[in-house]
Length: 201
Image 1: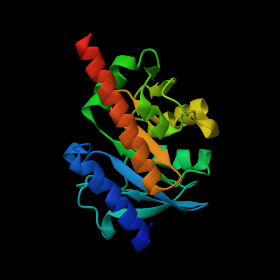
Image 2: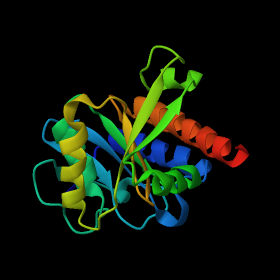
Image 3: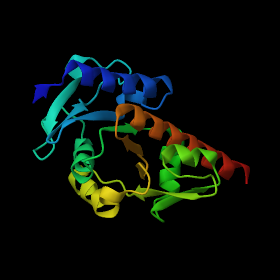
Image 4: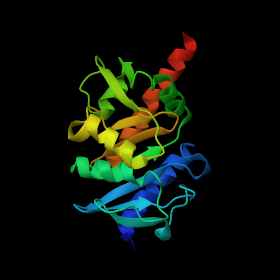
C-alpha cells in the first residue's frame, strides 16, 4: 500500500473539507476516493477527521486486490464502483441526517423517489418534469457482499450517480472530483427537501 500522489491527496482533502464544513461527516465518518488509473484508486484511511485530511491519510489500493488494513471498512464499495464503471473518477460517501433517516424509511421498498425538482438537472436529468429513483440498499457489515449487491443492481448503467445505504448514508460519484462533489450536493439537497416535505404533510 503506497502513498497517493500529492495532487490526488489534495483533491480528496478538498472533498473532505467540503463535506466537513457542511456537517456531513460527523465523528470521523464518511470516506472519499479518486481513481488513479485503470487498476488503482486512492482511498481515505479509517478513523480520521475528514476535514483535515493530509498526505498520510490517503493510500493507493489495487481495484482488484484485497483491502489493506487501516483503510475504511467501506473501501470495497468504492473499488467495486470503479471496477463496474470505468467512467467514474471519484466517489464520495457522507453521513447526513436526511440521507440516514430517509434511507431507513425507504429500505423496505428499496428505492426513494423524488419528483418535480429543478435540482434533478444537476444529477443528469434534462427537466424538472421528471422523477428520480434513488436506490436504497439494506446495510450489511459484510461490505464485500454489500458491494456485490450494489453492482448487481446498478452496474455500469446507473440511472443516477448515487445510492443510499439503510441507516448509513449517501454514496455519490462522478467523472471528476468536482462532478462527485456536485452530485452529492444535489442529492443531499433533494433528500433534505424530501424530508421537509414529509414533515409538512
